[in-house]
Image (cartoon, rainbow, N blue to C red; front, side, top):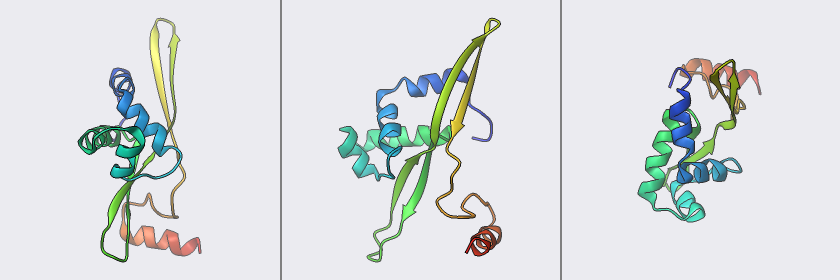
Amino acid sequence: MSEEPALGDVLDLLSDEYARDILAATSTKPMSAQELADECEMSKPTVYRRVERLQAYGLLDEQTEIRTSNNHYSVYTATLSEFAVELDDGSFEASLTRTGDESFPGEGEPDTADRFKRMWEDL
């Protein structure tokens, strides 16, 4: 999502207990869908539905865990660090603060060449 989501949409998403549980669990360490299902006591389809919504609002990041046995899988990490609502002069203002640290230098670069250049420069 390129622009900030509407206040009502974020409140709707965060009012969902499953979404909050996923954010809380993934704020401590990256977790797979199966780990989230076990940790949060929900079915994998429920995990995937909530993960999709959280990713749509930029509150959850997905990375692929590479295994030598070719059993690659996704892990999820919360990117939300703070959500605030302020009432000022008769209107509500909401702000989202996301974590900004990259797992590796250049991760946020959209172009592969730029990503490689940034990783190389940081060696």
